[in-house]
Image 1 (cartoon, one colour):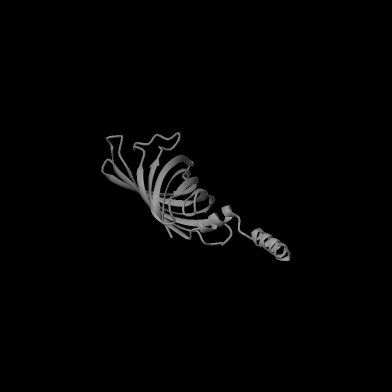
Image 2: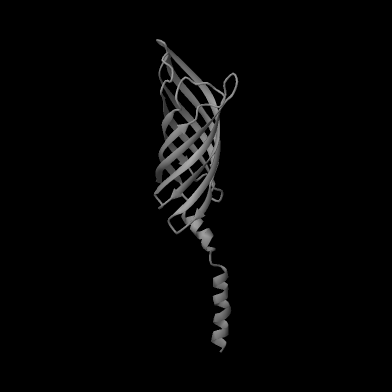
Length: 190
């Protein structure tokens, strides 16, 4: 009887110090780096008559998720290439290159030990460099862009993820230009 009483409280103490299963899954789902490709579909800027179609682009991105061990803040870098089709016979081909940096915050929702969903609001800065042809003249422009958005990524394993996103871009021109961007992304995490 003394042995049973002595083991009872000791077993209870060990149970009290066990980790919360949700917290343990979130710790296991913590990643340090993400790299991947993003396919972007941009809308024609609001209230702006553009002689080009909505651009379609491809981005390469890298995110660093290990700044602070207990705070799920991340920083990212992206490089994008967008192509525009002319809607007016006076305009020729056009392309745009964007380079940007952003900061975000991860909200993690674990499903199993290796799969989880992350919802990540972010904000940052991009700069675009665009060339287009008007009649026979090549015109180069560049502008800063402020961006804010949210991404939802499904990590199906510790290494592979795919997701979708919605981004608002404010192009800083003489009069600011507003546009929205839908993204589909796929990548590796390590």
